[in-house]
Every structure is written in C-alpha cells, then in structure tokens.
Amino acid sequence: MSPMVVVVGCLFTFFAHAEKHGIAIVGDLKKGLNPPSIQYLNFDSRYLPATVQAVLVTGLIALAEGIAIGRSFAIMKNEQTDGNKEMIAFGLMNIIGSFTSCYLTTGPFSKTAVNFNAGCRTVMSNEVMGFCMMLTLLFLAPLFSYTPLVGLALLRALLYVARPATCKLGKVPNPSLYRDTEQYPGSTTIEGILVLQLGSPIYFANCIYIRERILMYIQEEQGISDSISDVIEHVLLDLSGVSSIDMTGIETFVELRRILEAKGIKLAIVNPRIEVLEKMTLAKFTDAIGKESFYLSIEDAVQSCRFTLKKATAESSNDQNVA
Image (cartoon, rainbow, N blue to C red; front, top):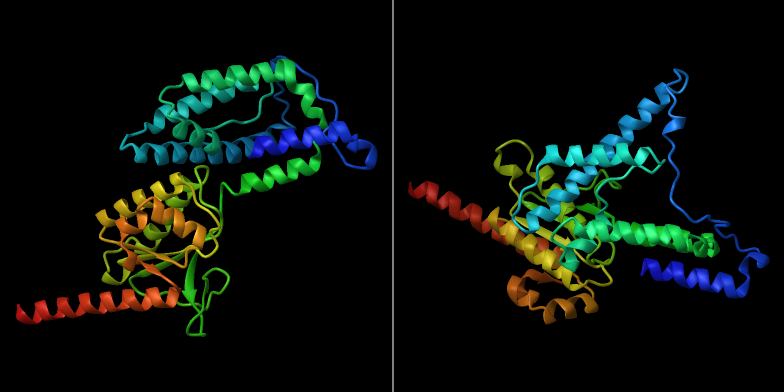
C-alpha cells in the first residue's frame, strides 16, 4: 500500500500541477549514486564529542533492533542466530556505507517481513533489491521530485502501523472497566491473568512485533522470582481495536498459542470484530483454539479464568490435605 500512495501522489501532483496551487512537493532530485565522501572525514576536536554521542546512541539502538528482528524470525523456523556475526555484518556495512554518506542501516523490520513471507532463503534477495535500488537512483530518481509532502506524511502514518500500540490492562474502580495500567496507575491487575489490548490491524508487517511484545509482557509479569503469585496462567487478548487481520497474523496467533501452551499458559480472545472473527473461522483458528476461548467482554473472560484458577487452587489444596 505504501508504494501505491507514493505513485498515486506523484501522478496527481504532476498532472494537476499541484505545486502551483500551494501543495508542497519534495522538489528537484538528481539521479545518480552518492559520490565518495571519505575525503570529508574530519577529526576536529570541536565536533568529536557530539559525533561520539550520536554514534553510541544510534549504533546501540540499531544493533539491538537488528538482532531482535533476526532472532524473532529465526524462532519461527526453529533456527538460531549468531549475535557476533550480526554485529560484524552491521558494522561492516555501515563502515562501507559511510564512505558515500549513506544513512545508518540495520536489519529493517518491513523488508525482513517481506522477504520472509515471499519465501526468500538466501542473501541473494538483498542483492536483487540492491540492484533494483541502484537502477532507481540512476534512472528514476527525478520522477519522485513530484512526491507531495502530504503523501510522505501519510506514508509515515502507514509505517507507524508496523509498530502498533500494545498495552496491559488493569481494573479500575468501576467493576466492568479495564484501562491501560500506565495511563491509570491506580488500576489493579488480576493474579494469574494477563490482559493485553491490541490497537491496530494485524498483518505481515507487524505480526512478529506484536508476538514479541506479548511475550515480553509475559516475561515482565512473570518476574525474576519463583513466587506462585508471579505465575501467569491465562493471557487475554482484547481485539476490539483490531479492524482486520491477514493469514500471516492468524498464523502468528497459532504460533503464539503453541509457545504459550509449552509454558502452561492458556490463550483467550476477547471481543474480535466481525471481519476478524470471520477470517479466524475460515482459517479454522476458532476450532484450533476452541470456541470456548472467545469472549464478548474482558469481564466475562476474567470471571471464567478466575473459576479455573480457583478450581486449580482448590485441587492443589485437596492434594496437600490428602498427602
């Protein structure tokens, strides 16, 4: 969708002469590759402190993001990644790129997701993409000079969907309301039950991110102690804010359910929209997880899970008494 926004915006601006009607555009873009810039390398002490600070911050963030993305996709195939090789690769490509004033680069989430879902297996896919990008810079760059800045703002908004908001919900004094625990510090969580809310469409570009966020919340909730109170037995996903989902998103839920089952955690879905529920039904996800794991409201789901928790506690107590 993002490329289509740029193409349509460029065509509209070109034929309507939008720049003459007050619509800001990118402006003149020269074709060609970046010229070598190593001759501008400067070690002046006046600029080194700011440069070192920028390098440390951007470098650590890019490295952490790249390694996290690589491991996320490796988990889906039960494969392993070597962090040392990742660091060497990121460092080498950024050193070479700096010779031509390239931006800091890492393992981008969107491109990795596209390659993964397209069935790419080797780095040859990157070679092809690099070659296509070179052709674009050499021959097609001036065409993008008509890109409206409004289109770029919309493109940024679309890219934001790749990192959707995910929050943990807690119960506020009203007996039937659950709200973001960060926004409402006074809200209380339910022992043994983790309630999470997803707030955007779920598709190939963000499904891995969502899965990792959910697992991160579980890890944080479990804590570092072995206390029984830290054990999560149920994870409730509120999908009332999810307007659509594709097959990759559903497969991610299947993978998430498999991971949670291995940890002894049950997954439940709360208030999915009709479009989302229809796709889950067609994909037989509702049969796999069980129709009893779908709830109309968070309160209904919590009450059902509490019954299971109380039952497990009672059985545990009975076993102890028998012993």
